[in-house]
Image (cartoon, rainbow, N blue to C red; front, side, top):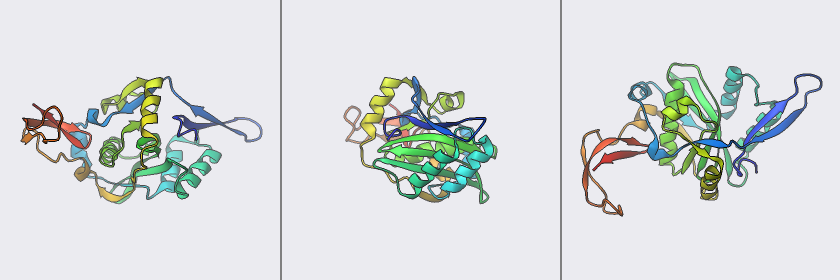
Length: 240
């Protein structure tokens, strides 16, 4: 329920005495959001992507273990981990589904993250990386997959420089909640995929500089001819 309402589920455990854990839902004053047409993929990430493959929802428990190994228990205390695992293995609750993202290099799990979806909104919770560029490649490959799967927004929680580098923007709490409420009751999207090449996943379907004609269905630019200028999520950005 708290994830459906836009809260991040975190927990706090006491340092001394008997182990007691308190659920601490978090709702930032500003939320860092990727709107997929604003997604930026660096050329260096494209070059590195050919060395990796990615799957989703295949190794949930292992990704949890890797996050704990890299970051320590932090807010991922046993009760909340148990809740995440039960939510994932039960197929979710209402509109909310738990997810894991797995990135491999030469068959080894080298990056990944935990997240959840509510309708067509996806939120990243925690991740890990153990190879150069693996975290960046995992993020942009996930973004393209989310866009192609029909997701409307990608919630990255607190704003940070590396998130802004991908095109994420910090938006006010009320604007975030309005976007979430518009997305959370949309039909649940299937995100699970078997291992596929991240290079193929983020490759532009048309070469930069190539000429394209805008589809007749476009309400403003139907029939106009432009040149491919870059990538916008799972789409191409066209300069008219």
